[in-house]
Length: 162
Image 1 (cartoon, helix red, strand yellow):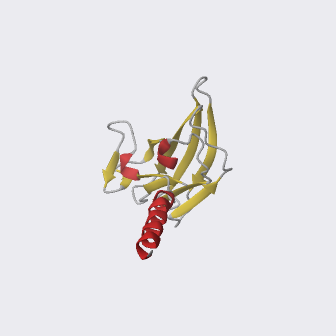
Image 2: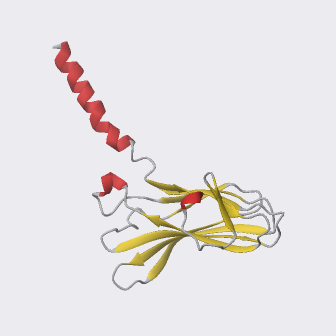
Image 3: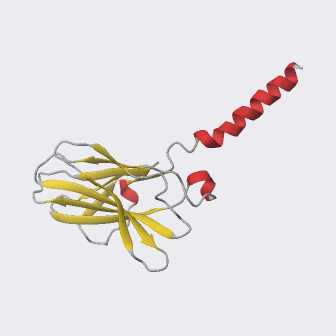
């Protein structure tokens, strides 16, 4: 009897593991973004930032893939876009846009946007739980880091959706 109860409890615990693994569905560190070669950027550890003497705007893109429910569900109930970054100066800003692209027409729609403010390090943007539809759309994050002075150390550390 004890063995049957123990096996039942173990089976229930194993069934809840996939659900617990879905707490943070899609994420990337800043250093995995796709950017133009020779643009004056550096990837250091998890971070996407400027090379020492570069000013202007750096652009990186992050492909959002369907990781919800092992990628089987085409409509994940995600509601939050989040980012971790450094913005220590009024001479720079980190701007992020979560974008949707229609698979047929290639029409782009902005879902959510995050713009840093001086001294900030994390921010979120929320949207409806029925926003994502991987059956009909592609998704990406457009990251733009701007600085007008080399004393500003603007950087992107991570992006995520859940």
